[in-house]
Structures are given as structure tokens and as C-alpha cells.
Length: 425
Ligand code: ATP
Image (cartoon, rainbow, N blue to C red; front, side, top):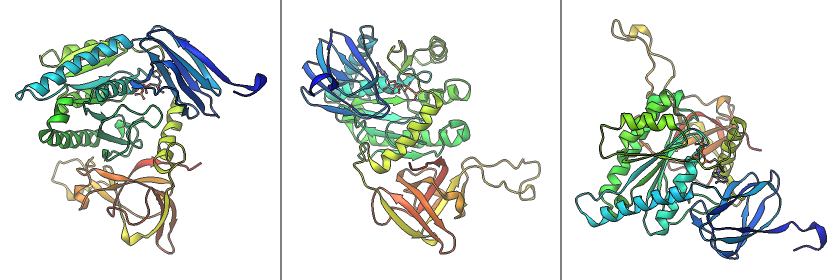
């Protein structure tokens, strides 16, 4: 500790089943460590004595089942202790899921473990609950699959995507989900209303691939899935929830913080006796985020993709000829002229139509996905390798400059454009 009054180090004693809720300051990181006892951050146990550094704006809670002392160094926006949390009900759900995983492992007939889908309005703690369930399962040696259908605030990769990844270890409280080989599909927008049919098509693709992977992997099949969803629960949003439940064959639906959504889902899923719909309380610690904050954190996620969470990655600037790359857009585009259609047909745009995009200044500052497609007509059904960020378009020399996480040639020449842009700051 520093001398005199300048020291910002302080200790907090937590009673059993309570948590320390923290919002890190806007400009400086916070260091924190577990001095004694045991504690976890969203399901992942803290190592004793080791200082962890949390970046500015970070919002989280340190929870203890049996009591702990925490030491903090640095300033916070807020920090307070809460002894009323829904953690006991959450861990009870985990225990039930664990029982089902064991059943699945033991019986060759019903070898499918629980497929959990977490639903609820924005800021109800869906991502956080998904994370806890995954980390608790991983701690017990399972390898559950995390499926993230939230294109706005996804936690696997950049915004505008749906993705899945196996979770083999409790999730790191600072780094989040490890980015080793996630299965990612690029939707390209941060709201599903932009192209509902495309969103559904990608959900279907993802589900099919996972289904295939489960067939050959008893361990991940028994471990099951945890599916995180968007906070859009009205109208088309509700329809998309039903579509996801159906497409992934979810058998446990966890509804966070909304009575109305719970009763609607319970009624509509009554006809499926193998699907359990459970209502869970929202934690008082969940922080509401303004649309401005969401926009900022999306931009931060893109920065993180290229530069790492602590500026620990160095992306490469590459130059390519226009002729070496092809950019496509999905949906919309110019409609077929009426004369080219059968009599009586309306010239509606095909939402899954793949159309080439010209190289021009509109590509500047756009985040493009690098598709694994081998032909343009495979773009909708193909997953992506990652992203590039366009930093310059030289129309005279017909060259494009872009940022990429790696140097050298891209894994494919097919790039996909949505409405995702970023201003490097
Ligand atoms: P979205 O509307 O984006 O789908 P969500 O329902 O998934 O949101 P979360 O992302 O889980 O909500 O939570 C919102 C924020 O609140 C996150 O920054 C999360 O870290 C924080 N948070 C959740 N639970 C707690 C808690 N108990 N104490 C402090 N912060 C918390």
C-alpha cells in the first residue's frame, strides 16, 4: 500500500451467500484479489491471493457461498455488498441439469444431455446466467456447448454474428470466452428485423452443424447446450425465440425476469411434454445499459477482436488488389424487373439472395466477414473464419487496405458485407 491518504487499497468482508457488486471507473482499471475464504465471479472461482485486473466500465459481482475477504486497489464507479441474490435458485437449476447430464451419460438410449435456452427482456441477466451455468458445468468436467444467438451483445465474437463454442474450462472472469475455433455465422446487422429470414436461416445452419457434431461426440452430447438469446421478446422477437427453441430442440427454457413471457411460453409449449419451462428471478445486480452504452460496447468488441482485451494483439495492415477479393451482400439489392418475372408475381427481393458489391468508398470503415464458402452461392450456408476492417480504398490503383488479425493471405477471397461499421479510436 502507498503511504498516507493516497492509498486506494481496501478490504471488503463478505458474509456467506452475499456478493460484492462492482462497476469499474470509466478511466482507470481496478485490481482485485481474494484474500481469504472462497469466492467466484459468475461461476468461476477466484484463485487465492492473485491480483486480477478489470478494465474500465467492467460490471461484475464477486459472490461467496461460505464467506470471503476481498481486497481492491483502484477506484470504482460504484461498489456495494448485497446479501439478497437469486444465486441459490440458479445453482439449484445447475444441480438439476447436472443430474440430467449424468443420466444421459449412463443411458445409451437417451444420451442427449440438457439443451437449455435462456430467455428474457434486455438487461435481465441472460448472458450472466448462461455463463454461470457453463462455468459450473465445466468445473464438474463437462464440456457443454455455448450457443450465442445475441447479435447485439454477443459474447463469443464480434457483434452481428451467431456463434457456438465448446466450454471446457470455467470462463475467465476478465478475458471471457476463449476464442479457440468458435463456429461463427455472419448475419451482419445488430438487429434481427433487418433480415429476419436470414437470421432464421443462419440459426438453422448452426443447429444442423452442431447436431452433426453431437452425433460423433458422446461427451459433448451428454454435456448439452446453453443457448443465450436476444432481449427482443415482442412480436417478431418472440417468434424468433420460438423458432430457436424449436430449431435447437431445447428441452429446458429458463425465463428471466418476466412473468408475461413465462406464461406465454408455458402455454405455447404445453403441447411438448418433454420441454420444461422455468421462471427465474432477475438479479438486482444486473446493470441496465443505455443504447449509447450498447453501441459503445459493440464498438469495443470489434476493437477487442483486432487488438485484444488489453491491447495485447497487433493486427496487420494488408493491401490487396480489387481483383483478388470479392465482396458480397446478402438480401435486399436491386429487385428483378417486373418483365423478368412470371405474370402476376410481385418483384420482392429475395432475403437470402447473394449479390456482389462494387469496390467503392462505401466500403471504407466497414467490418467484413471472411467466408469459408468456396462459391458465392454457398455464402449463406457457410461459417466464417473471422473479420477484416477496411481502412483504405484506392480507386485509382484499384487497391484495398485492410486490418486483419493475422498477416498473409486470407483463408478465402469471399467477403461478406452487412451494416457493421467501426471507427477506430
Ligand atoms: P442483453 O440485454 O444484452 O441481452 P442480458 O440480459 O444478457 O443483456 P447481462 O449481460 O447478463 O444481461 O447483464 C447486464 C450487465 O450487468 C453485464 O455487464 C453484467 O456483467 C452485469 N451484471 C449481471 N449480474 C450482475 C451482478 N449480480 N452484479 C453486478 N453486475 C452484474
